[in-house]
Length: 183
Image 1: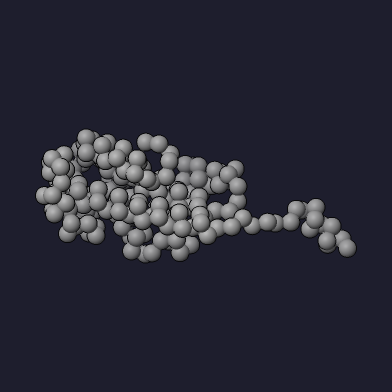
Image 2: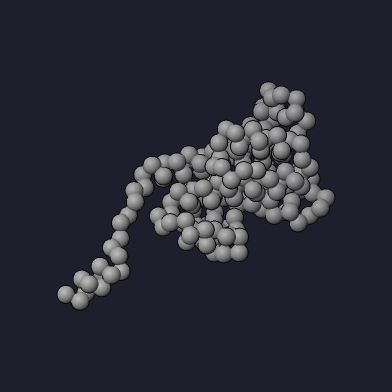
């Protein structure tokens, strides 16, 4: 998948991949989507230029994991606790799928996790009124799909609002500060 922010093109690209993959691969794809959306939100919030942001967001650095990104965006007030809680469930789904070779969305623990997501009541209606490729999906798999896309759409909307409100901050140079102190 591309590094572009969550958008219509990414939605169709991801949907095609999600619907054709095994449950295990689909769970990992959800993690990729959530992580990309959170990174987009954090990048929209950060003021400092790209080199320091890149260092923070490297996989092995401070903000390299999805769980840290969820905690930080919640702590900064960029996400509500409800959104953060649902994102944590999706991250747990991703982690189970990444580490268990024969996992199924239709069986515990993934089905139990999916049941707790806000999409639980809409998945069956969605499946019944959707094209054939969705009708073949299990209800937990659709719950995770609906939740992931809804949340990532909300996060990208928040990122766009943060980008619009952010104005560049101008700091004096170190030499200007030292000159002012020496006066």
